Amino acid sequence: MRRIRPIRQYLTITPVHTAAGDATIFAMPRPIRVLDVVLLLTIFLATLWAQTFSDLKPSPQQVDWQDLEMGAIIHFGTNTFLDREWGDGKADPKVFNPAQFDPDQWMRALQSAGIKYVVFVAKHHDGFCLWPTGQTDYSVKSSPWENGNGNVVKRVEEAARKYGLKFGVYLSPWDRHEPRYSNSAEYDKYYAAELDELAQGYGDLEEFWLDGAGSGGHVYNFPHIIEELRTYQPNALVFADVGLFEYGDIRWVGNEDGTIPYENWNVIDRHGNLRWRPVEADTPLRKGHWFWHPNDESSLKSVPELVSTYEQTVGRGGQLMLGIAPDRRGLLPDADVQRLKEFGSAIRERYGNNLTARHAPTAPELELALDGNPDTFWSAPAGSHHAVIEVDLGRPITFDRVLTMEWLNAGQHVEKYAIEVYKDGKWVEVAKGQAIGHKRLDHFAPVTASRVRLNILSSTAEAHIREFQVFDSKSAQ
Ligand code: FUL
Image (cartoon, rainbow, N blue to C red; front, side, top):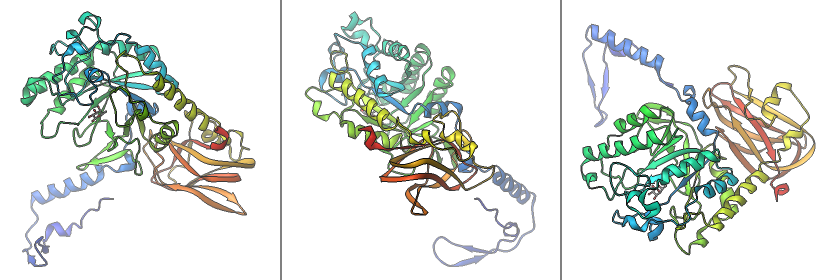
């Protein structure tokens, strides 16, 4: 809460403490001037209009995006053929020649994992463009693939849409090939022109990924570049590290380990500007590798590792962005295809059998949080700051996981909650936290109880809960 300073303080300045020490200087009182009145009015109005975290709401596009929960970022280019992660920009375009390029195969694998959107790396730091851009010859045009007439970005976009996945692009700002990179203004023009092509030729872009890697010390005119994007793609969400571009729509989680290691609030402060900016946590399917490398099967993450990643990202109200890498054939390796399928099955098994679905009804209005339908939601009484959703399971049931979803369209309200079970005549806490957000997954040692509740201990305004579900991970094995 901002406090208005007592008016008197502005009319007669009294003691002033210096930063240097405890010395106190006394200023003489002076008469009220017009400027003082203007200043007072400004402060008063600014206080009235001050943003507060809980008043901030997401855009409709952000709401829609947060519901997707899982995306994939796809790295494929000259690095794939040269066993590199960060190309130096000197690769001969002739090395790019996948003989069995089949993005449909990639999309089928992603679909089996439950992934809902893809971001394709149209240009990585090496500067090689995966579409026949008019801005440089350093692209698929100069490769032998499809005799220089192919367009990887287009084919990936078409495959994504064919399988019902949303599509977005990554265009690396850092460019180790383009000579104009050393001249900020010239490079901005080049980059904006590349982005224009991507923004106008590939349908609706769900997300535009601005990667900060390698850009230290380089100045970009991102406000202008993003204006260009918004002209053609008003609904595209811009992902960016908060330090790279202040007014992005999605923020980087701060690591590539597949975890959100903090309470996850959707609103963040950038120099006094509050902004709804949900988190995306990017992490590759193969440890430490965004591009495909030969003899690298041992780096493939295991199913338990992927489930844990899911629980620490989606289960903490963020988005999981899983990195996948087609090989030199232009196919996802069989082992990766298999792993994605196993991952999808593991999530469906673990979070597919909701035990509250068989509950005995307590209060009819609570049904909206217990109906297994995230499109309906229960609301606590208007203006309340505390509420409880109690479920009578009808008989003692063993469980060790709870899923809670907050309806966020009106803002993120829950600030403290506990999961409690009724045992030996009293309510016992089995999990607690602060943020719920889009989705929160809590796990705890198995308990057997016939009553369980979500105790919303504190919310800034009335809580809205889309789902409250209970699971037993043992029954999923
Ligand atoms: C990082 C890049 O440097 C990696 O190569 C990769 O593209 C990853 C998704 O973002 O910043």
